[in-house]
Each structure stands twice: as structure tokens, then as C-alpha cells.
Amino acid sequence: METYIPISYLNDFIFCPRSIYFHQVHGSLSQSMYHAKPQIAGKAVHESIDKGTYTTSQNVLIGMDLYSDRYGLQGKIDLFFIDSGLLLERKNQITKIYDGYVYQVYAHFFALEELGYQVKEIKIHDRTHNRSYR
Image (cartoon, rainbow, N blue to C red; front, side, top):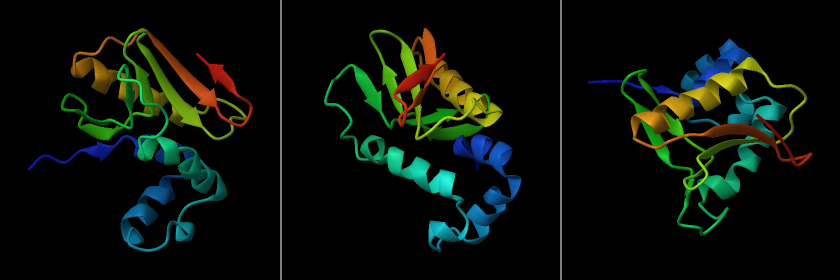
């Protein structure tokens, strides 16, 4: 049986390695038990992605499940605009581009490429300030 590492754990590990432990130990409990305020705010940002209500365009992949056999990773993208090749990772508020953000979005990139999609551009979007970073 193959097991995949959740892509979100890449960011969580860089943010706080203990949070992955608490995900596993307290997974069935309220996330407020093991998530810090930035993680809780980030989950709220993803609500329209998780529900698939961000857009109805057929040329945008929203919250699509991804698997990378090559790297043993699994996760969900935020947005991938098929026509332009733009992969967009949304964050609630960005004070700096943390390594975890970069690892997470590149894991999405590699998984999309493995599925045959052509990613031409990657951006991390700050929802609070409506600003994108390449």
C-alpha cells in the first residue's frame, strides 16, 4: 500500500513541525486545539475553493485533488487557469514569502506537470492586500 504525504504538511512543517504531530494525534478533535490563528484564517480563505464556488469557468481547475507518484505527495490545488497556465496559491495575508509557501506551490506544480498540464506561471496571492507574488 502506497502512502502519500499531504502537500499541506510541507508548509505546516516549515511553519511548525509539531503541528504535523498534532494533526495526527488530535485529528478528530477541533482544529482549534492544534492550529494557530494564521492556520485557522488560512482555512477560512480556502472555503470558496473547497466548496468549488470560486468560479464556474470550465477553464479553471478549483480545489482539484492531486497526486505525485514521483514524489509521494498528495493534495489540492487552489486554482489552475488552464488557458494561461497560471497556478495560483491563495493565502489570507502575506507578510513575507515563507519557504513553506514555495515548497507547497512547487509540489502542486510538479503534480500538475505529472498529470500532463503545462504550468507557465506560478503566483502566490495575498487575499487581504489583493496582491500577487511570482
